[in-house]
Image 1: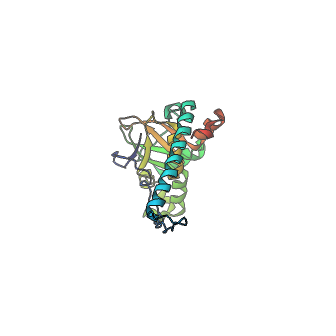
Image 2 (image 1 turned 90 degrees about the vertical axis):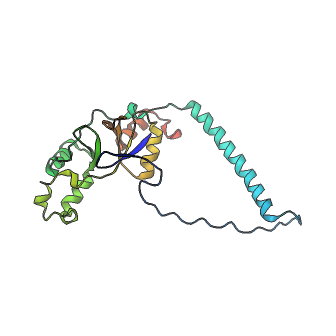
Image 3 (image 1 turned 45 degrees about the horizontal axis):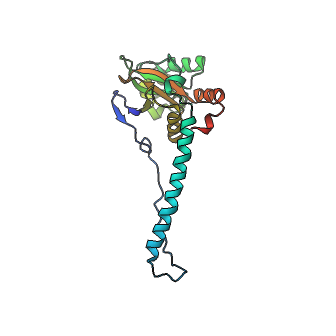
Length: 215
């Protein structure tokens, strides 16, 4: 469904929470509870049984509601929503050309593809602005040299991608979780098929008023 593509075009499986590092608070130990009815039953066993009973019933209720909603959902796939064909650039494209394209076409993200059409990176308007504002950060001496450098030095990689048959609600969830504004859609061969951006998601929201109820 989802994969992570590196600069050399290699694919690895996407694992939620592993695309970017996160700090997770340690799990707190459950405090000891004393029974107040004088029962001789082990307090920890009593609490565990009660906790399991209520948790199980809650999970079952959630699954029943989810099953009902699933039966009523309009299933949209990435291929139904994605923008296609997509303008892409070569890794050897000069940053000046990319900047000009972004300004004229008002792009926020441009996929970077190899000669075979496989996605190897993605360039955002923020990547361009960051490069121009801080040339030293790219080990380049001046802004004049930056704009003549290839985009391979500034593109974001690895890239999180999805297949055309991926459900759009899953894509929305991953984009929200990973804080990304665009996701390239690729065929099984790795070649670019399309792109889904936040604008595409908003268009779905407008076209399907009940969209917020089934994501």
